[in-house]
Amino acid sequence: MSKHGFDSADLRIKPGQPVKLSQFDAQGDGSLDKDKTKALTETLHDELYQLQSRLYAEGKQSLLVVLQAMDAGGKDGTIKSVFRGLNPQGVVVTPFKVPTPAELAHDFLWRVHQRTPAKGQIGIFNRSHYEDVLVVRVNQLVPEKVWRARYDQINAFEQMLSEAGTRIVKFYLHISRDEQKERLVDRLNSPDEQWKFSTSDLPVRERWDDYMQAYEEVLKRCSTESAPWYVIPANRKWQRNYFVTRILIETLKDMNPKYPKPEPGLDKVVIPD
Ligand code: AMP
Ligand code: MG
Image (cartoon, rainbow, N blue to C red; front, side, top):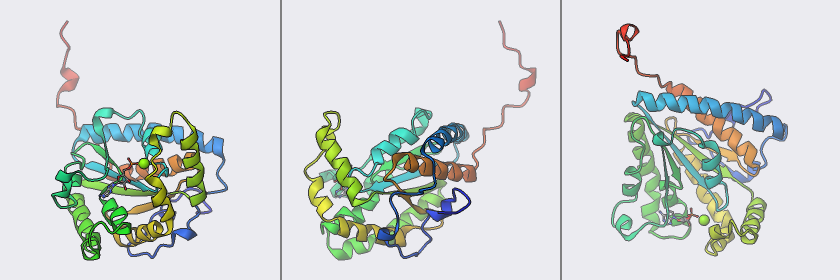
């Protein structure tokens, strides 16, 4: 972490950069004060709201936010906290589940492309086309030759989206294996959260190292200038929300959406009684 406060470059993976996730501390920045950071995140949230209003009104560009994480990594929590209170007409969330027979009867990007954000919209992917080189790779759901080709296919797809006016940011919410255990235990014991518990998450947890390796290849091969990956330390939810909010604001500021020019002569308009 930078000595001079937050710098998104510290969390962004450079194109081609080899990544060892065991060297990324999921605890985050020990120098951040919890209460102050939470208060700051609230202020930043107002700024996010303003930027989204401009993006929506402008209607010329879109933002695609990809969220990936291990089970209980905080994808749902991030969506609920970071995007709460924005104009719901301008936000579309899509969770990607085990593909349906109809989806499996198409290429792997078919279902994804249908859900990319229209101009003026923020599209949020809760899981994404990256599952097709994560769970699909680890569980060998297709031959290696098929998933190996997908990194380039994903990069080409994202490049095309970017040239069509869709800005892309991708977050890998990085929790430690211990933190996952704690969260799964909480899930198991809380009546309000048991519905989220799936025994099918346990074999996935057993293959933690294989998943980390699959994520490392994704981060190395698919973090590009136009569609960067960020590794977010996510053990502490308040830090995770802070980092994600900062990066979204930075991205939207760079996109610089503007309110459309008002019709000429509005100063002479009188609203009739
Ligand atoms: P959840 O996000 O907890 O609702 O779980 C969704 C499940 O769908 C996870 O176990 C994902 O690994 C799985 N999933 C998502 N996309 C794919 C895919 N392309 N192929 C196989 N499984 C997938
Ligand atoms: Mg789940």
